[in-house]
Length: 199
Length: 144
Ligand SMILES: [Zn+2]
Ligand SMILES: [Zn+2]
Image (cartoon, rainbow over all chains, first blue to last red; front, top):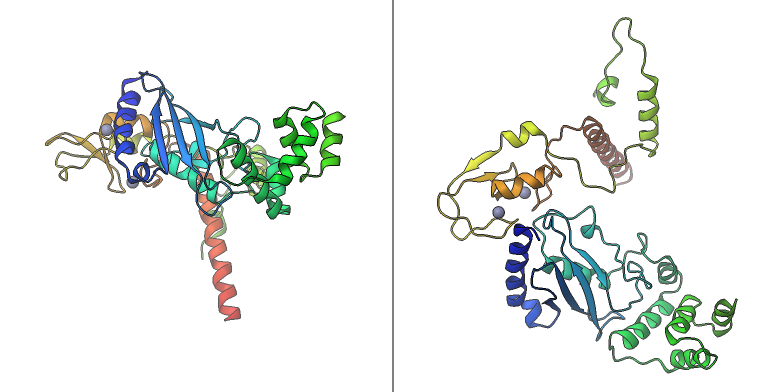
């Protein structure tokens, strides 16, 4: 990997380790390989959001041309959010695209993602299904996002009603994640979700 | 009050010159938001060559200040480039960035480019903004 990119990541790594966000456990950064081209990020779900109490893992790939081009970042932890694909974890965030600037760092990226989790931008969605629910049925969105946080990110809030509906579908041989996606998509209406899965 | 030609960033036809219909079509498309070159979703084009060649060089640095691109501290007497927005970088760090896009990597201040289409687009955007401001002022003076 190009020298400037590796040197930059080394310096940033030190900066993040010392930062107060790490001290408060809000963000975390780990090296995956020795040449500083792949890292694992972690962000705590922001307080007063459906993601609170959850821990979200990110894949960070540093291009050879870093910091002149942005790092490639996606969620490895499954998440229900208008700007993050519930299927692939791909993120729609301007600073990871055309608003990137060479003076930005992995720390600013992690903090921006945390801010995005606290304030979604449904008019610039990555996941159209989630964005639609977010706009049309905010309460349903909140419970669904909280449920995903509980199941995939270790969040504390169980939803017995949702768990029971998923159970009904898994009893019919459906994989629990597929059941969760179908139910989330159809506002937890068991009949419509069942119909969608079996047609 | 700017005149018609100035406002639309165009020049009147010279004697014997015929209108460039393709150009008119392009302007029409642009004005209706159907620009064939849509700059909304990409970085601005590279900084103008003349601008880059004439960047101010400095050798004295604030104590403990560092280059925002490589994050290394400047050493005493090290030559660095200063942008119009007063931000300072190693030339080996800022030049590749300005070859990519015409903004300051720190504050996003925009510099001149050599791309005529983009400069026209910028003028158009600026004029649009001014117009919005004028309408807002008018509205405020009428309803306050
Ligand atoms: Zn530098
Ligand atoms: Zn600047």
